[in-house]
View 1 (cartoon, helix red, strand yellow):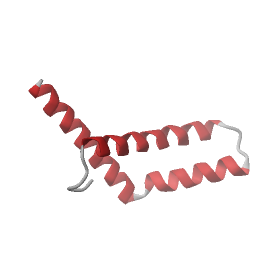
View 2 (cartoon, one colour):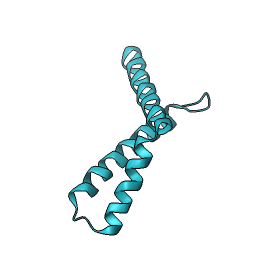
View 3 (tube, rainbow, N blue to C red):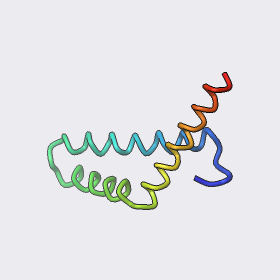
Length: 74
């Protein structure tokens, strides 16, 4: 993420990325009509973008580190 991103921003980004992955998986199960196919293609392209994938991985790491720090403190 960035130096200005906080715990809630990293968590929100990680959740949004997971939601897109779930949406993509759901769309693949629907009948293949042009609109569904195009939306699935656009989501896949976004998810597979190297910059997006790297940002999502970093967000997940930040969330995991914050959870670990919280469990150690509390």
